[in-house]
Each structure stands twice: as C-alpha cells, then as structure tokens.
Length: 228
Image 1 (spheres, one colour):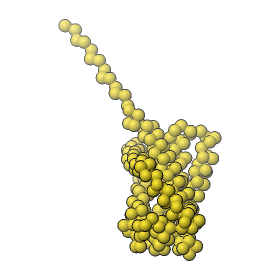
Image 2 (spheres, one colour):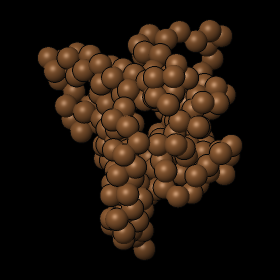
Image 3 (cartoon, rainbow, N blue to C red):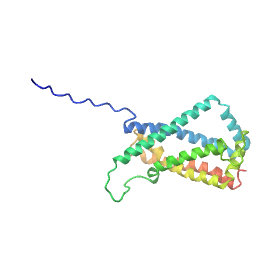
C-alpha cells in the first residue's frame, strides 16, 4: 500500500494591519489627522493676541458646531488611541528585530527626535490630559471661569509659572515628535526618494519649530505681561 505524500500546509495571508507597512500607513494617516488638529488648534489659540473678544468669539463658534464638534472629538480620540497602540507595536517589533550581544550601542543613523519618539509620544499624551484638566474642564485651574471666558482662563492659567513651564516643556517634546513624524509620514507612504527626502526633512524641522514657537509664545507672553 503506497503512502500518499502529505500536502504542505497553506500559508495564511498576512492582513494589512498585521504587516509592518500596514502599521506604518496607519501611523501616517492618524498622524496626519493629529497634525492637522495641532495646526488648527494653534491658529485658533493665536487669536489670544487679538484680544478677549476675538478669542471668546472663536470659542463660542466651536461650541455652536454642536454634534459636529463631538464627531471631530471622536475622530481625534480614535486617532490618538490608534496612533499610540500602533506606535508601541512598531517600537516593540523594531526592538525585537535588533541584533543583541553588543556591549555598546552605536547609533549609526537616526536623529535625536527619531530616537526619542517612544518617549515623546507618551509625554505628549500625558500633557494632553493635563491640558484638558487645565483649560478645558478647569479641574486643575486655580481660577477657572465656566462662563466661556476663554481669554480670562488662558491669562489666569498661564500667570502661574509652573503651568507655563509645563506647557513649554511639553511643546519642546512636541517639536521633536513632529520633526520626525512629519517626514516619516511621507516615507511610510512610499515617498522615500533620495532627491525629495532631504528637503522634506528640512521642511519638517521648520514646520515643527514654527508650531512650537507659536504655542510657547502664548504662556511666555502672559508671563511677560504682553497678554493680560
């Protein structure tokens, strides 16, 4: 009686998200959503320089969006959670793929911002929570005005130097995160051309610096008495 050779087991197709490139695309898409929010949030906050009427009117318009505002918040929340989970998964995968056995680690390639992504991400997440407790819900604000006087809340909040210092430090980490995240977003979707990547990297640094400078300028202006 002849034995029939066993058929080789079929290989299961890897799903989009299971693959490293899939996770990187998800990181790019969610990162783009969060980047657009950061830019929009900054442009809105910079109206503090136009005076209390302008900033408070901007806050009222946001409230008048009603259900649409909650949809935007929901998209942002999902984007943040997916971005964090995917980022941790990629970091763990990269860590597991590194060769071991070297007594001394040598960074052959990689900027400070790229090496601190796994640190800057959680710190920014903690800052966002503090920001909500401080200037959105007023839980940790020493003199919060619940009558939608956003201008007064900003001035009184940043008049406390520990709060301003926390914002400034957080914005520095945000700058590191953005300077790497912006150009790597292009790389993740296949724009990794030697001709285009150097200017994209430089542009990413410039954009990150502008965003950080804009955000930091507000607590500094309050402490300096320019905004009061």
